[in-house]
Length: 304
Image (cartoon, rainbow, N blue to C red; front, top):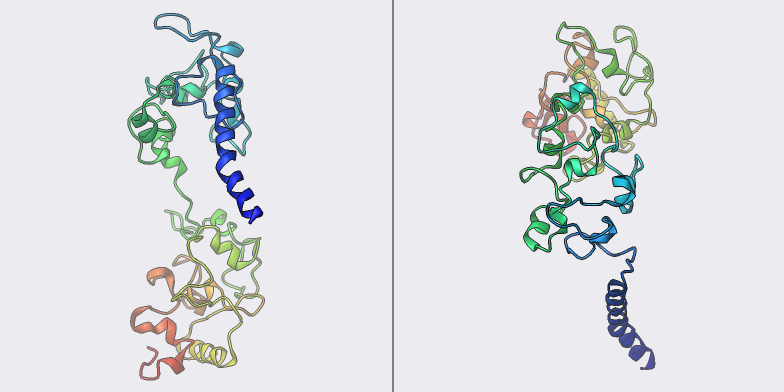
């Protein structure tokens, strides 16, 4: 009983004590590490020598050095989204809109963030623009980025598009997964060298998938003897390959051909599926890709 009472006292009294301490800290001018100085209008002197008045010099501390003014946010490559205190190139400068101002020719925090907005004690602003970004309301943060940066230069790489516009194989795309450029005319699936485990290579981009794909069943495992026999029979009957990884497990390329049409010689079994939807080695239509391994579960259906 005493323990229960002690717990109740701690739960009810401790928050009140902490709240009282925070109030006293604000009165004394002391700021805690947990204090959010934004959107209150109470902490001007954290950044200014004195509370600025309209039309007067804003008198920033640290000679306006934002790396010190915004010290709470850190400035390492791992903790911040964009370098600051840099002079953009002339080409980049020509793309920067007028409403994203530089300071002394340099890109600083206030280039993208409107510091005055976060000085206001207005709930609506804090809700709809909690990062106090300059410009219109951004549905995606990258929309702000592409006001200065060329969006086409940041297009997501698709390593499966391996044929150039001139019809040649793009070696760089191949080396996204292969440790060395394979010879498609000579080497077989078991000969090629990869930079890592197949499962991990695929999940680098297809992270929304999992080993429980498809139909929420774990396919990334060693197949049973019955399934393995079905796979071998399918390969002989339809002239395809359903390759296992180096550990003898089913992997993503067992069902999906990761190569674009034209990378592998069309007469080879390893080329099959490159033209199919989702690059399935056998068509999804009529569950052909499923029957290839699970014939016993589809007794009334045939492989075509």
